[in-house]
Length: 149
Image (tube, rainbow, N blue to C red; front, side, top):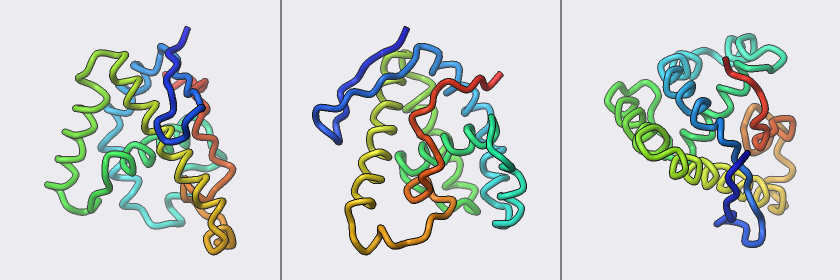
């Protein structure tokens, strides 16, 4: 079973969010400090941490998406990170699961829309792919089927 939401950024598109997203969002909440630790690593250490993908890569990708959607912060600033954690919980943890799923659908829609704009931009389309959620086409943001248990 799943919720279906209209994509507010790309009219006519539908975003499907499975009911178990609540458990995944709570797992993200439990791993907020681990996400900060990951972001403080050097680029080489980050690449080694993610490895070939899998659950850890999926969790970190979702953290990056949420952080970009909520509003980026200075990863080294303790107060900014605490505010980010409060905002994350306000959007995804404290509301009723249907509202949290709606907010997560908006997050997915926003990221998909940003990717589409980058693909359409002649200048940015020539930028090499990196570990960005916007330019790395290997990152499938819509995949909600991985088990995080």
